[in-house]
Picture 1 (cartoon, rainbow, N blue to C red):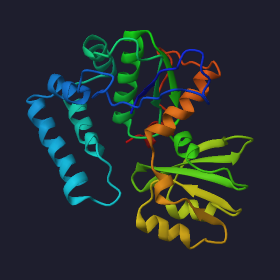
Picture 2 (picture 1 turned 180 degrees about the vertical axis):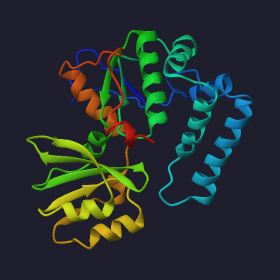
Picture 3 (picture 1 turned 90 degrees about the vertical axis):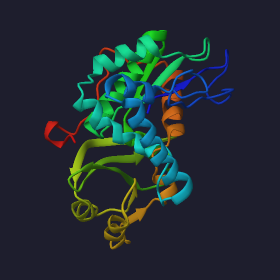
Picture 4 (picture 1 turned 30 degrees about the horizontal axis):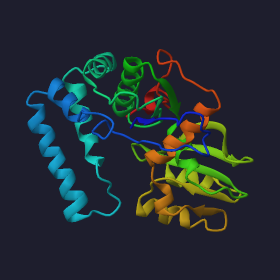
Length: 270
């Protein structure tokens, strides 16, 4: 999900007056962007999206399903976008032409770049690029596992940040503690939970959204593996915004024409 931020004039990151995370359904936009994209690309898309939204409300507010976050059902629309011919360029163009942001509210757009769902990453990046190009905003891409790492307290251990990439595998990124933040080391890997447990020989913190069975498998190696709490293992937009803001304040920018999704390699996409 893209997030947007505004810098208080003359403020540093530490004294930033406000930070806004948005799915382009208010408060800084006049749109319901996901619904409008569905209506444009999917036949009877508005009706379809209303059903998905009601199901989302049921899971979040009535059933209160454990581990479920409001908005998770939005991933259900992604296969329909692809099935009905939505491309990166078409989504970007639609966003540029239809996104109505309140004037003067934004300086920078941040977006998670993966790894993750092939379709989800492409649509998220297309939306973020469309927003940045339409409003001439700066763009910051943040690897998804860096977002997970940012949620963890610095400890004197190596860390493995993980997320599901399909077919029973986890994307695994390795980190070591730096002076003020976790630093990525090595290459991304796609491993089963069992293989990950076998690979870890030194004391390691493992964070990420794991199933109960996966946590049980890793807990067998308690002498070498420490599991982050479930609350610290969620990918939160606030940490995406925080990481992106620090990079932006340090003068870093991404070129919308060059920013691309991170895939482990082509056969690992889902």
